[in-house]
Image 1 (tube, rainbow, N blue to C red):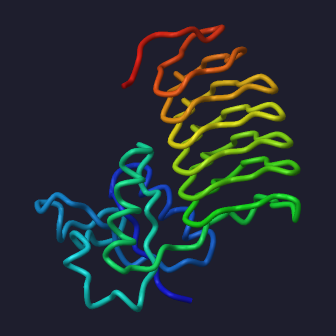
Image 2 (cartoon, rainbow, N blue to C red; image 1 turned 45 degrees about the horizontal axis):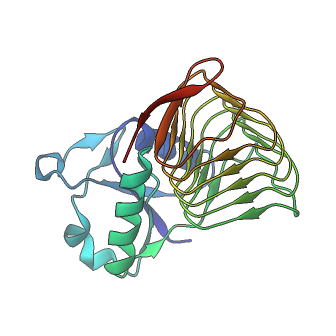
Image 3 (cartoon, rainbow, N blue to C red; image 1 turned 30 degrees about the vertical axis):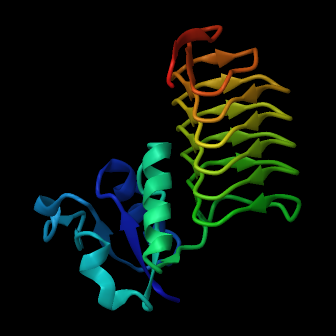
Length: 211
């Protein structure tokens, strides 16, 4: 098994390191584009620098690109990593989470402790399903989506690429969440959400365009 390097060294990257410790993955470092972070030790793990600083490890490691919650930053890290010729880490699933044979998982995603995923769920690439998220039947969660802790998503929901679903929010059945939209923490979504918009509140209402 190749060793793991994680993009980012903030709170979410540290939680992925914790997840890896529970999943028999050997993390040897964090990546950060800020030159002043190189050489620091965070949660007993060194910050190795940027990709050019680990060129000698290229064929020895896999890289987790979903080490940050911001979907656009995840996409940039994934694109940068692939173009540099590094191997993307497999989806990492906490050992307590059951994945049905009727579910599909993309590459490079993170599924955290306490998550419930039922049946016929499609999860794309570089998705984050944070702690204790509840994902019901026939949902489609597209690439680069981040689902916050404690989110409840009812059945037959489609979440577009790069959407961010805030902590503790709920989405009723048969809803479409547009690409690169944001759902505020604690919201209840009862209607479709257009792409690149912010919705928040109970019930969730339009707050602003994100274009």
